[in-house]
Image (cartoon, rainbow, N blue to C red; front, top):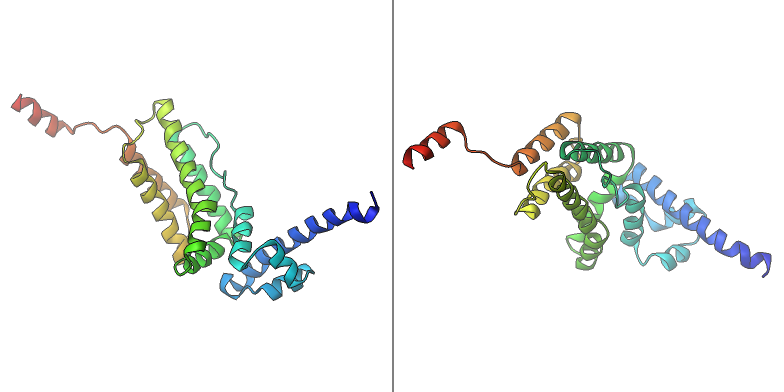
Length: 209
């Protein structure tokens, strides 16, 4: 095998990484909407056709960039309790959205997906569905510990939790700050913990028996 044959894959891998890095940097500086393929190619030191050979369009490129910034398995680790699992997940998301262009990229992709059903499907498969499974696994783990009974309305619980986070990310005006994280975790815990009748209600039930 010639040295050229050996170095070609290495160069391709290096160029691939350079494109991802350039895309993330430009999105962080200009925003997703103003990140142009020609500028990404120039900064990465590759041709536009090289980018289009690897990604069919800008959105596909940024789905991969987002996946690098926010790994699919983020938050899957066992932190010992439901409260700790959720808090750690939110803290890690908060740091990523504060320190990287992940939030801006996600906002741009979601906005574009409103008029592009194919992108909406790609975004769902690449990010939405895996993220929901992480939350479902956190609830299942809590049920296995005996912290909670796995909720019959798990999808609804996941919707509420995710929706609160996405609302802040998409608007871009309010961060996932410690107070918000604490309030959201407390709210979810109240939803899923085994409910017990209030003393007044219990007395009323017993009186009727």
